[in-house]
Image (cartoon, rainbow, N blue to C red):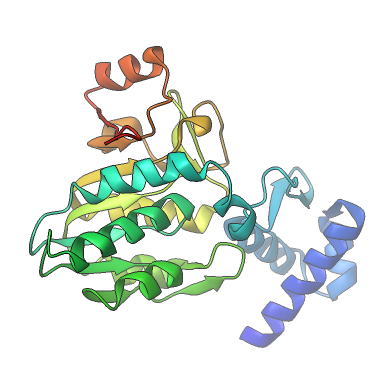
Length: 262
């Protein structure tokens, strides 16, 4: 059943990539399935960020909106390193923390690994949904990897199983990434599954911090991860404009920065 479902999803993705979109009727004809079945496939593909639902069917996710880890990892590297260093300094001895997947939280994991190696912080336990974060941190502290459905594009896991897994823990702090942010909608992701997992991680934490470079302000994706009122601080690079910083602070959100010469 699982293999058949994955095969059907792959056929739909191939069709959408070639044609740009697919109607419900086209999906039914292609796969020989009922309307309710094709609608479930469409819903699952949107949750994974592989396609976007529209009236009467689905359409391809734009190249701009698609998440590609390797490509995104080389963008705004200096800013992400600032953010990662600043976020790592929020971690204290013997804490139990969650670190989200993503290329900015990757830099936090690198900075945290250095602090652990230099004995600046000790006895941590980290839960993460990122296989990249796992590889960086496991030589230095206890790491628990979240179970769930693996995404090759994002190099992380998410889904209902992941949310259920997180529900059994309470964190001192959660450190989340984001694909976009607006002051009206909050923090968003190109993957609905990832946004739901981030929401769960925030709910299970005493304090939640979102890591993002300032270029993501004003960008919006379709999966809402957290509203502004649900986080304690945003860790951001020093290029944030004064107006945005003021709006964060007016909403009782701490703005944390680390300048490049620190």
